[in-house]
Amino acid sequence: MKRVVEVYKGAFTGLSPATWWLSLVMLINRSGTMVIPFMTLYLVQTKNYPIGKTGMVMACFGLGAICGGMLGGKLTDKLGFYTIQLFSLISGGVMFIVLGQLESFAAILICSFILALLNDTFRPANATAVAHYSKEENITRSFSLNRLSINLGWAVGGALGGFIASHNYHLLFWIDGCTNIGAALLLRAVLSPSKNNLTPPNKDFRTKTITHSAYKDGPYLLFIAMTVLFGMMFFQIFSTLPVYFTQVLHMTPFYVGLVMAINGMLIALFEMAIVYRLGQNKNTIQYIGIGVILIGISYIVFNILPGELSLAIFSTVIITFGEMLSMPFMNTYWVSRTNKDNRGQYAGLYTVAWSIAQVVGPYSGSQLAEKAGFTALWWTMGGISVVAALGFLSLSKANK
Image (cartoon, rainbow, N blue to C red; front, side, top):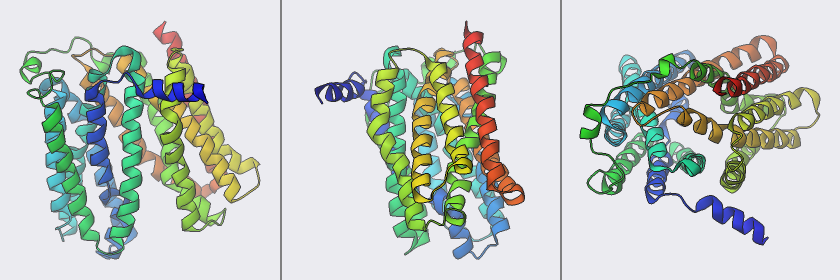
């Protein structure tokens, strides 16, 4: 027991105060994440739109997120991660409130795109900030702490959002907008250049030139391609997998939510400790490869093992450990290829990879499940995991 306590103590010590503040900003921001998870229900139940129109709105969110990732990466290198985070949180907060007041379908489409664009400029800026405030030896733990804040925030936002949506959908937009603005106020209070000497002032970015472009970094572009494949697998968790649980495993929505909650609980309990122990070995790429394979296996088990609720829990546990092995060290890898002058550009490409996967993954997965069945979908996910794992592992030779 004493050794376990020491591991957890080591996992959470040594991080800079700025890293903790940044994670608190993220927690406040994500605790208000209510609009996107309930947007489809809002459009169907409140606006009486057919499912086809809701798909168009979500596609606008996805396209805006891709553009926001690209723009955010470029602006972060030019204007600084603090300025872009502050701008994104405030402007995104205002746009959430505006979106909730719109009636026209065309206006909702346009606003959804603009909102996602503004909101997702935050992600590369935030990733750059995490790397900036971290020491080299604890950078993976810093990203894991950030992920912990995101997962806790999603859990809080999802739980409250479901309750609020059952009473008044319009409140979701106000809460999401106000938490964005609240996170911006905290960011300004504790991490502005005038309040925190670790935050570089804007003038430091005005004369900066990019000497090593992410778009000319061959191994990194391969990493981005493999990240898209990995993300396509990962986002089945939030799209086709719940449908499989209800239609094939005959689980009620209550048990689906319970099983999905296991993912967040395991991450909160174990990820920091796992990263702390494994991070001392420096086998970043190997951990990513193992994690990717585990996520592939988590889908294949549906085709080879019997069970309903027990099988869903078993698969979710495998998915979660695959996620904990891969995602923190993926952050470590992309940061390792950057310097302080081009980090926003690299973070922007990494953000775009996830945004593309978030659009392509659920759409392609649902189409395959509808036309060929879930069995074909799970074997396909297993095959993609092998391709992605081999692609990630090949980066070890490229680095050498």
